[in-house]
Length: 429
Image 1: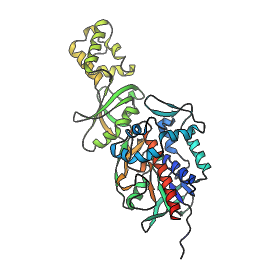
Image 2: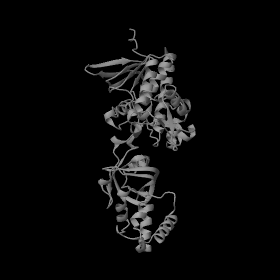
Image 3: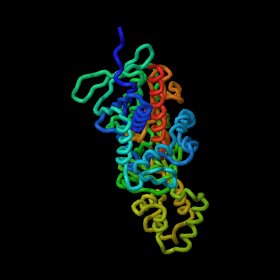
Image 4: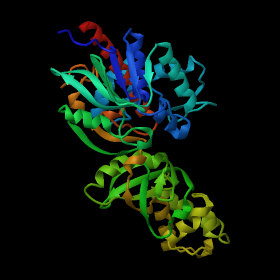
């Protein structure tokens, strides 16, 4: 008895950054591609990236891009990032009217446009390649026969469960960050059911909730510290640091500096408490800041110490910093003795913010952990356990630094998965 005909050559599950590029690449090579998305729109995570501005990728050489990942992740991504480079995704977008700018830290953003324009342009590539995009189609499981993927089970909005058949299935459904966007960890359950190992999931690029130290309160929400050095410590030993802007929130801290160390903090909280402190003068040593403080107080004896502190933090934080240094708010510089001055300098170089209470997984821009990289071929993104099954994007155990690295990883792994899925399909036909 002949087997039922395939509904497509390649089925792509998940229309995020990785899925869009995977579907586009496979279709460009002549494959009949069906792209299934459980929500009502594509590129949802792209739309919220960079606060809606969309940090498209990171500039620089591929070697520099790979430095944004842990060593094992960089080794896995190396081939993919060379096959679909950061300048290639930028060119795809600029060829269709997007203007971009590269910031001093290497982050590439649209100039006067937004993430919506990025998604609009990517959507135009899918339409041009004749990708069959099906919205509001929630995949419930993968079908495998004789060690090979043969299809997916899904339920379309308002309809019962159906099955689509194809000799190649690409899974790119993301992690569990921002579950409201549709990323609810579905892919990990499917992978486990097929024998794959899934590395324990933790938050990455996430805000951190704090039990604030004395003098710090939720009323500081919305205040930003510019270009500071945020450090995380466990039992007094530094475990992570990141230089950048820091934003106080109702619950704790966010902003690039907080996101930059959140993965390390989340992992280390499994074994003990973690505290945060911030260096407000990262370019100067303790001795240099002490000399600056002495010079100011000597030259301006009648001014308040608060005036000096105002040069390091926004006005709304001055009182909190003085409290941390046990210096009265009305203290004139002339009456600042050596011990008080040293306390003040110690706070400027290491202002204790408090204990980290939580690093919320659902608030992270990405999640660390996922399908083990040891069980996926880095040259093809194909499962080592199930033929014709491919993984790409955040469903894999990859989480790069803040700065466009994660979108680049999604684009690159999606490109490779789409290309290899299409080529494998045609070889078997």
